Length: 333
Image (tube, helix red, strand yellow):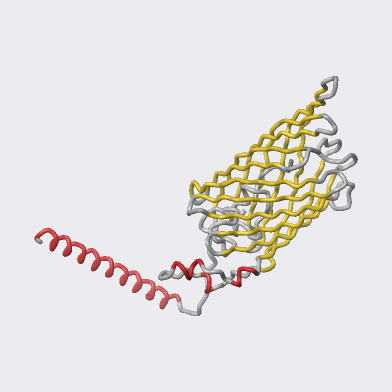
């Protein structure tokens, strides 16, 4: 099993909360699925995503089982540009392979299933500087109507390098050292809290285990705290092929901390797969919005800001006075 990470929240929350920019006020995690959002975490944001999991596989024709546990992890950092993200990702698994023939034989295994260093760059963002995405304060219908623009996805590219150790039990024989990995990630943000992410991945290029994978993730935010998702992942190579399905959800504990859980399974017996994982995402937010020079002298800008604050304070004082007068009238009436 390729255990669970990703989104939105991806995936936001797995790209959730209608993410229309690189940086968001709440954490933008790839968990709880395994797909990667098209968007980065934002400049000067360091994010950590980790999830322990349990795995059970049964190879019926070959008569052996695999059971164990593992942990997947990712470190993400937004560097230099809003569109650029550097990341380190990996999965470490420890399990026992038990042959169920006449004589029971156990083989204990432990190693990285994958360990990758890479960078992701947003090529196209259809939501950038979009005035159409501002909420309509007077119409629920206007905020939830279908927008044709949402059919155009955000698109990013990823390039990275895998590192595999010699005699790794989770890779094909002879696979070791560095190998390239490329990915195209797209993301649609639909109205009503729906997000659709697609990943197309070519992994371990030039080796005897050159995988092609696709991952499709649909996420829906139920409210400002909860998100649910469904996901399918296809894997094709000479070493291993599978179609995996995942379902789960996430909870936004705070704007910088997310919890999640998911289950993974497939529909075949070579092997049959079932796994459960729990995870969390946490970010260190040092992001600062860039100051925009609109040509206003500093002195004039300071006076404008001061007058704005005075006006706001006067309005608050007047509102407070009106409330007190209203309470007095209610008391005497």
